[in-house]
Image (cartoon, rainbow, N blue to C red; front, side, top):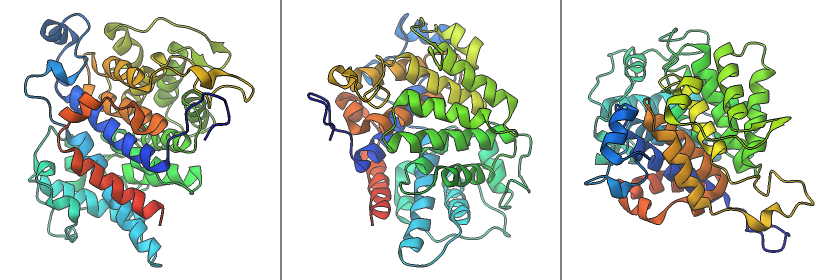
Length: 380
């Protein structure tokens, strides 16, 4: 609880976990409805402002493979933590690989005979996760090799698609572990399907950003720390450095270069940051959307003697504005929307999630079920 008069209580760890997973699913679902549309087609269908809510969609929308794989990431982590909590050591990356192999089965893709046959778990019983929702080819092909990819023995060594970063928020939701271990867990898991340095580094940095938020740091502070992590890494992919630095600069959050900036239109957004089909672009677009629509410094961003916490803007309106910016462009709208939703849900907790959007979300009970499992094993 804040001791600033009138300030809002900080969200609980459980609220941040539920908020992150549900927020990502909301952004994913809206983005999936227009993922393969140009901005011209989006405007023709929804008006000049684009798609801004579920009410504009006849019959609602489904979430995509982004949410499916995010939930299977949760399941792999839950299994590893269940073993750890019982006093038995387990290879976390092996647990994640087995979880992703079970996801592969839901997509109707057989694993080769040499691949292990993992035992089914609760998540595998959920029919909604057995639908094929435009899964990424690299995720499918990497898992279908039956080989457990590593940083040193990668599958798909040249691929840097966004299939790594879009599934990696859950690594940041594990409390009480060092930040660098969060990064390693995420980057190692990215290597199960993608071999390019930018693919695994983007995933690791995204997980670090989420981890910083659940520790109570503000949006700007967490974003700047993530960029600093990349800039201080001599082996960081140059394109990742460039995209993240541009996201902060364009949002007016780049250190000394701080100030109000006009929000980019969809054409300029993809021109400056990319369409989001590759990992560093998806992360940059999602992060930019969050920062560019933020009403100002959050209480955690402000100096200790500041009264900024007394007049924080409505988290729901921030969420709606950020998702609208993240998805309305000629690019990978579901992944960029999912990333923005993950970030804001981890920051604000469930309080930022629009009630009417949650009412339209597909299978929220499945998402909440996986969130509750993660809460249980991280608070045991």
